[in-house]
Image (cartoon, rainbow, N blue to C red; front, side, top):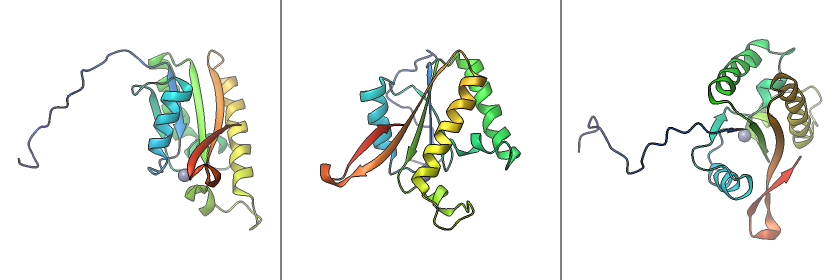
Length: 156
Ligand SMILES: [Zn+2]
């Protein structure tokens, strides 16, 4: 088979618009866990909308600091909510996020998790005001070594 040959999948196309968007970081190590969480806990099937950039929801907290990042993300989310009639927005942050760890937030000893939770709350507030017809919820994903390195999603 040539690399330039078309490929046909086995799944039937489903034209139904999903009513949930999950906003998360791109880190692929977390993706299988995120997809399982979406399906088993949130009831969001494989056709749920996902928006992912490094750091997840962080651009939505940058209106004052880096407005171009804020606007890039906000414009695309606006368009998605408009086109899909989104009813539910789910924000997910994860432990040891490289994006957050690489950002300089002033004091060197910043608690990354604390910052992520603060950002989730700030983004939640913005999203509730901007999209009053949606519900917004936040989660924080972490390893739990006591559970055999399983991933736990805590409500925030
Ligand atoms: Zn990350």
